[in-house]
Image 1: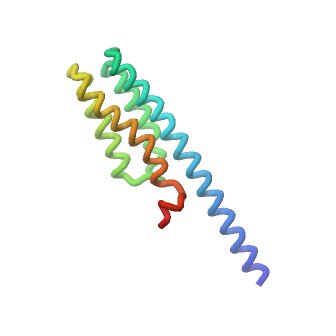
Image 2: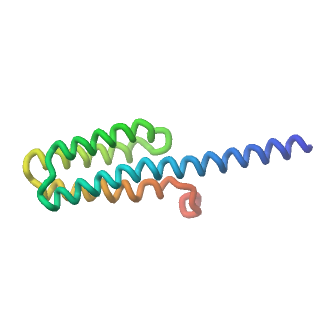
Length: 125
C-alpha cells in the first residue's frame, strides 16, 4: 500500500516536471523565432530586407524545428516553413508587401503556437 502511494506520487511529480520543462523549452524555441521574424518584419517595413535576411531566419527555424517535432505536430511546423519560404520568394522578387504579409503570419504563429500546446485549462478541456 505504501509503495503504491510512493510510486503514484513519484509518477505525478515526474509528469509535472516534464510538463514544466516542455512549456519552458517550447517557449524558448519559439521566442527565438519570434525575435528573428520581428526583426525581419522591421527590415521589410523599412525596405532594408533582402533574401539573405529571410534565409537567415529560415536557417534559424530549421535548427529549431528539428528539436520541436517531439512537442509540436508536423502540420504547424510545415505551416511556418511554408510562410517563410513564400516570404523569402517575395523578397527575392522585390515584392515587399506580399513578403510582409507572410512575415506577419510567421510572427503571429510563433507567438500563438506555444500557448496552443501548453498545459492550460482551456487546452485540456
